[in-house]
Amino acid sequence: MEDTEVFNYEYEDYNNYTYTEDPDIDEQPVHKHQSTCFSEVICVSLLIVNLVIFLLGFFGNAVVIWIAGFRMKRTVNTTWYLSLAISDFIFCACLPLSMTNMVMDDWIFGLFMCKVTSCVMFVNMFSSIFLLVVISVDRCVSVMFPVWAQNHRSIKMASVVVGVAWVLAVALSVPSAIYRQEVTHFGRTSCFNSYPPGGHQIIALTRFLAGFIAPFLFIIVCYSVIIFKLRNNRMTKSTKPFKVMTALVAAFFICWMPYHVFVLLEVNHLSLSHHVLVNGLKFGTVMAAANSFLNPVLYVFMGNDFRQTFRSSLLRKMENAMGEEPRTISRYLSRSSSMDTRASTHI
Image (cartoon, rainbow, N blue to C red; front, side, top):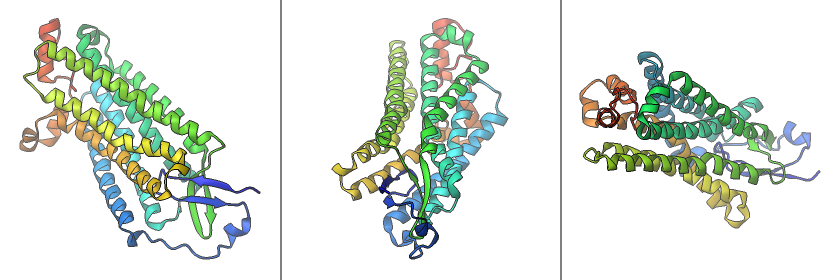
């Protein structure tokens, strides 16, 4: 039977495999595989980075979930933050599995978890990005049409939008579960991608367009409109909104661009050396994972002054950051539309 070439980069298993369906290979391995992770500088470095991402992302998002879900009054803003934190929390909760695989150089969790962990990664990618777009559009609409936003923004509508974002994220992540397989070869069990002819190129391009380019353009347009509107109304005395906007867009771009670039290069893997692809995809995957702990920092902590955050209660500051009454822009909205300062334009 013709051998099948397998490429897998999503979860620290960055090697190419050629295998056959000979049952003797699986049942009677020639030798027992030995992990060499702790003897390799790159592997140990990636393990440490992933551990830091897990600790910061898991507990950081857990705090956001606790505050937005249990301590604060339910609002449109807290609905966005809560859903974003849940997405990042679930992803971070699965990181120990990939770290264990990295250390052991052997997948021990079975076919079901092989499919689940891969699917969770892309559900997180799509849901996080879609939610960032939703938040950007929400801020843009609140600044451009404050009266309409005050009359139509509701928790029910926000919940529906969040639900749609999650459904789309899951739908776009299904292929990662379908084509994820498990095989044991020479004593080593691997969780890998087994795409049909042409399937890898289609999936990679779809993820790049739907999970990066289109959302990035939406975010850029929304924040450009916000900045233009605020500058025209002489709101440039406070530079905080512009700094936060720049940080959000920059983090989005920096975290996800390397991953998508190397995935697209991997589709045409013969044009680059295996070493470059392996290390590039390792770096890209770690950068993408880092976005899961950066989100609570950028969307919560940067909403307030750092000095005031350390001087007063951290929990209270987080509540203020996710609340519906950002002082500076609210004053502008109240002047421009004579509406209640509860209009949400926090960025």
